[in-house]
Length: 232
Image (cartoon, rainbow, N blue to C red; front, top):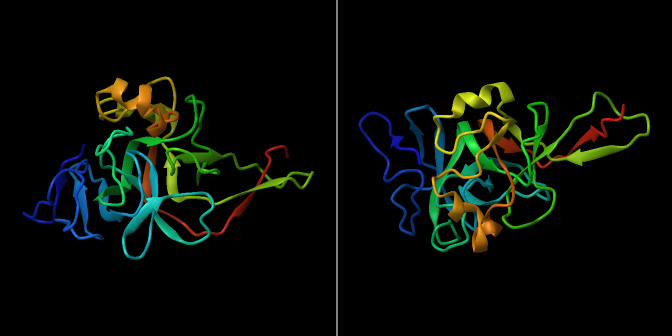
């Protein structure tokens, strides 16, 4: 949970973990920063999402899970509100407004990867198939050139989002839910109750490792790029 600071002496209502129902105290589109310089955007959720998942944000500041099938341009954010559990009302639904992170370093973005075997050279893309939870981060490995076989993979690259290099991940150990020293994967919970996050009936809200990422106002264009099969 981050404590927000507003411009001058103005402080936004509540921390980033808090959820609201209408009327929202902040207006959709409001921005704020925390003391570490991370920036957050207040959005109106139009679907069920979970902490650490990716959302696509439209021109009305409405947010829904970011899917690989999206063929339109969207801003991208990481959900900050609630917990990574299926226990209602611990996660945002279409009745809620809340904060998403759009700039800075987020140490625990949800992925479908079972291990920390990821490097900073991988490209960030939306999930390639719809699952639960929706909106997890996926990766693609760009090849050096187009493969001689002509085989390629289309991917909707998330611009302005990239993995924190493994050598820098250990610098996040003081961050809540910080990354472990074994690789680029963060611990599998942002908050302290690991059992609540990952076991029993709550597993459908968390299906893989979490990764530390840099964000510089990420977005997708809706135009798929061709990546080689790395067999060049």
